[in-house]
Image (cartoon, rainbow, N blue to C red; front, side, top):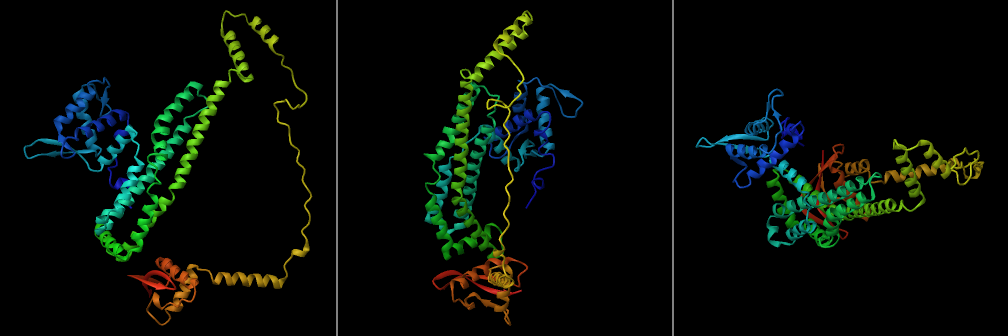
Length: 464
């Protein structure tokens, strides 16, 4: 797996982390917008300079590109920004045949700038649109001529995007919850509540639960994925497509990777309920917290605590006024209440009444429940028998070594099957085949075999 900075230059993020990060971010987005009308991510350098010059004309900020000379001229700042972005690996120069110099964005910078745009616009995904694309591609019979290229790859990408968007919604609700603080006034809580309701409650959450309910197509999507897994013809075409697109030479690896992709997609659709339940829980918690905080803030003016707060606030104002007579204030305060030391703990006291705990006497264990030596040996033998019959990697490897005794390879059809337990053992033989510590490996044939009413892939077991 590649590291990010095997693709991006080391100084790529410097413009977005330095002193002028706001200006550089604006300039990058302006550059990107200027490329929209072009047939490529390249435009005449003079056009780019004029675009950035127009941006800096409304800004009196002095900028420096060498920590010594400070520049105020808009055109010089535009040229400095272009040179700095070029040095950090955002763009390069390309000369046309007519000697025109173009500014060209590097291809790896494009998705990062697009992400910057999405973050600023706070775009919300249409969940129903994503899931209907998955459903439509699985239902279109014409696409099954090339199932991997036209169906499976797109289904995998859209499913991951759907899960990602739901997780983003989950995270955004948590972010709004974290913004609720005890220091907020009642009006701030209400404003925050309506902001949440506008941006999350009625914009994304409500759509997810009503018009864009993501469970609408789920059953038929899972059914189609199972059909692909069970169809030998479709899987053969998918394997060929996978090997061509992903440059995979091993047919067995292509088959295993395809099965893993399809099972992963199926698993993600089953897990949608867990994600939605978490979103529901956080949404309910946010609404409850907002209402309770608002009610508490609005009610403090009428209850006992609110009245005391108003009295103390008024007294603080009196004490802070220079012309106020302090003796008069102290007299008024003395008339309101009396403070005295309390020598006992009463139910009305602010101190927590201690709870006295008593340690109970533990009864001795009865000697009747002690196991005899004979019972211990029987119990140990039962555990050993259970361990010998487990479908562990070691036991399966020993069983295959016994099957391969004197042979280099055998077909799965040669394995004796007398019970469902023998069928389960065959499944574990296939599962553990990838472990390098085993004395065998398997080679799939692409065919299927039926035993005791069950159908499974036909493969050969080969001694290592």
